[in-house]
Length: 73
Image (cartoon, rainbow, N blue to C red):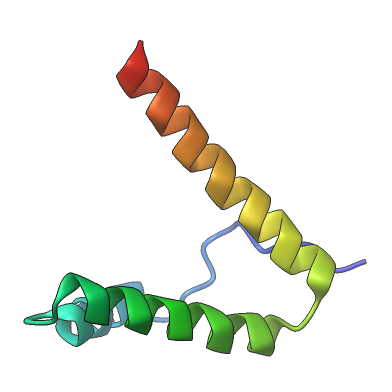
């Protein structure tokens, strides 16, 4: 069963970060949200495995829940 790759797997992480931030530069919040949604769907299609995608969703949700709890306490 495939698992989500959690170890660093970028060939050029700084280049990707620069491209990502450049894509969002001078965009409205709504445009950035639409770009992010489209990027997520493109990458989800590339991954293709429902279990891996659900694992990623769970990890992302847990990070937000944990961060929210830290700010509440």
